[in-house]
Length: 314
Image (cartoon, rainbow, N blue to C red; front, side, top):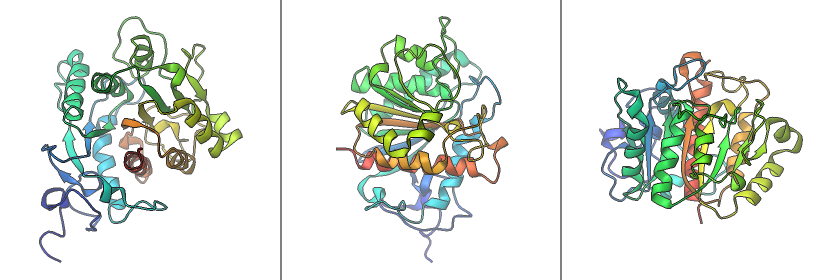
């Protein structure tokens, strides 16, 4: 074993390919990708946003990016199972590190997240973001509509709609898609919310495939209906880990029983290859409430499926 066989986060000399190294040690970059803020030639930048002051229940998702990175080491030695190719052979992927913001001025945090996200995507890479609580999706979507135009379609996996009415401009992880819809950053009529199982009387026009619908109709029906709604539109993908049932993701702030299994979520994502995903986030992993790191591992697998979606874009 030569000196370049470990700590690929720092020693990797190529941004492509899968290279095994011990999963129990080393620097905690996502999938052992190189840490870099040089985005020249980069296809996908992975960024953490350790922000959790918009939570309504249990805090702790500020530690989510670190936990997902650690869990992802277990997956970094081979290509995703069932994929006909290794997406890391097709895409140059780096771990950009974490977004910086001043926690002492929470009112400025949304703009700081938006500015950092826009700076990345404006240089060309697709952005994969690890939260953090779900509020971060709002400044991320704003950054993407600045880059790609808007409104965009939202593909949203969650136990909650996050569209509760709010006219006060709250920094709240339950209201950000209300604002995104009202401010024309996302188009509810061409958007899909999957896995919901909390009641909100006003859907704002979003197409909802709730948890019972997924269980009753099955994976293939979810894929077909989602493809029909999204079409060829630019899609921002936001996945709250509490979309999964607490038996598969206990480490989250607002767990709700009756959710999707890990298999259902991963199979739906795999079945949506070919949609026009312009950016994605995985949020609400709170390791303090996790059991055996299964929530962080689910988050890492979901993030890997995002990379597969990026690699399979038309």
